[in-house]
Figure 1: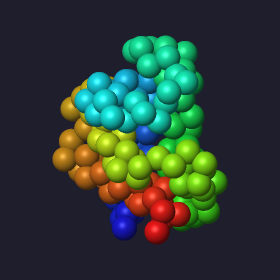
Figure 2: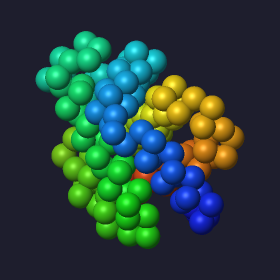
Figure 3: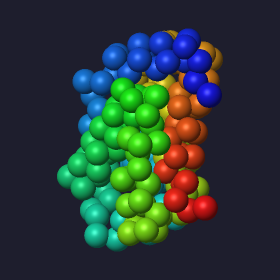
Figure 4: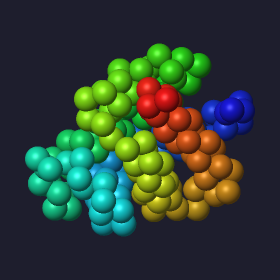
Length: 141
């Protein structure tokens, strides 16, 4: 569970990168498609070339969902319920991909936050993104 200090760190680090959400999302998805190419199977209708309009648009949606989750940590299950349903019942995305994307998001955050992405920041984001992945995977059980 996220501590008060984790929440403070998440908010502080998010405030530093929130203005570049679309860029973060695009970088994270591009990284996922390069490092974990099997994740491409869920996007057959997308132009998956780096920086494409499809990747930028979807990356922006991902980051907006994370921002909403960050702003509603006490109600994260309710906040992500619609996305959980969509991914489980309509898109049928393998929940492993939530963790893979989380790793890619952390790398993108680290590249932008630089020295501000220290061990405590990493740990807070790791907990948060694990929680998001768990919530999104709930409907698969």
